[in-house]
Image (tube, rainbow, N blue to C red; front, top):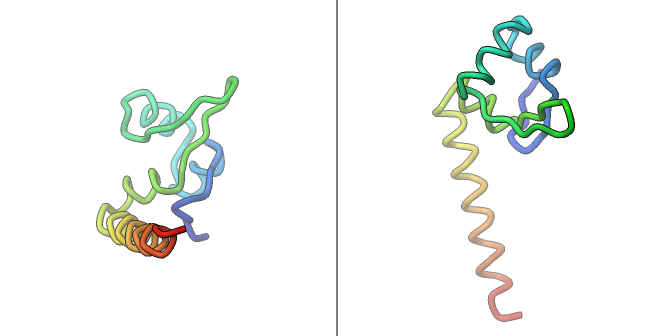
Length: 80
């Protein structure tokens, strides 16, 4: 299964993607190694965070591609 940088995952989905136990997921969240947003009583984790944890190089490539696309849009819409 592919981790998409802009997708939002539950802790269970993230555990499955990372192939870790729920206790390990709780520890990573508690230690701040995975940043997440708490909505109600549940955490939501961006795919970007999972990629950052697994492979900083892949995460950096995804971030660079996003920034490049963002700058193109800004340049094209500047005169509107």
